[in-house]
Length: 475
Image 1 (cartoon, rainbow, N blue to C red):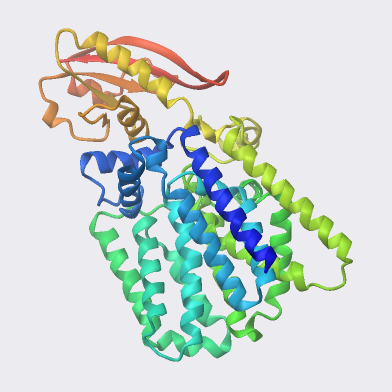
Image 2: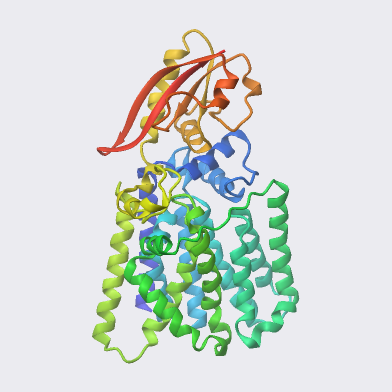
């Protein structure tokens, strides 16, 4: 009992530490997009993310203000809720000792720590998926066909569809919970499962109604495995694979104890295919690592044939390595992307993927936005002495970041939006393309003439973050 009390106290202190970290990192583009939707009345839309994330942002800003702390206010609380859900699920499946180790492993995962200090769809998914699994466990313990736990699990699945549509992997994982053990397959025809499927379908209908966009998977096995080694830590990733392999032998005989493996398999399979489509720092597909941590905690506790001292040493090395990697991933300017084409760094060809592995910096998405906004603000003040100007950015990511850090009433527009409401006015066109020598054709067609106003290199902590080129577009 003393160890459990210490665990809960440590979770409380960890939550406070995560809160303290929130203002130290600038908003990522997905977070700035959520703020943009709240600020300009588009929070119920689905493009790039569901409406649940802007809702959390709105509530957080009411409590903590308009800065990074307010925007991310609920991120540490959602991480705490995920940890408690993991502990309660594992205590019900096994015992308190295994539950405690599962919580420790989850909280040293780099992917989980990244989600706990940023508010993206990943943060919501990391909280809702373990909670849905816990609700399924409670529902299976009761004979009532419409126990409240079925409705709670359905609400969690709907929440995931509204946070990161289409949440197909989660629905497959819920189906696997009943399909994997032979003794539970009759639940696939029961009212409780139909309620979950109905709630998920309602979320998908909303997503389709809003004009859904489907991304096709990228099959690049080795870079994706490298990505997992960053988000799970290399040694933990190896242990996850071993724990999953050992658990498979008895999965069909363990009834409800197969639940972590049933959730793990489809979520990991889809993350292997769709992981590169998640924008930094949104790593919602990596939620499978939570269930891998559960399996590892169980197998690492009950596994025989290994001396106790060796088991303790391996456990300590794996946890310390993962914790250090989490700190590195959060605070350094040079975390490795391991060959992935991040939307916020220069594009590469297939032949240069592994060079990119050593040189790219995805954290550029969260660096230098204040400096960028200061440059645009200075150019805007210089241009506004004779007429009213507005700002257009070359894509939505740059637009939402400038909109937040410029802190002006009029929204910063992106090149994709319709500018009919700004007819007759001049604009500043801002691009972060270092090769740009003129505005794109779409901008040229909308304005009479243009001129280069400013070219600047944005630096952060001595590192180049991006180039900004500002054009004055007249008439």
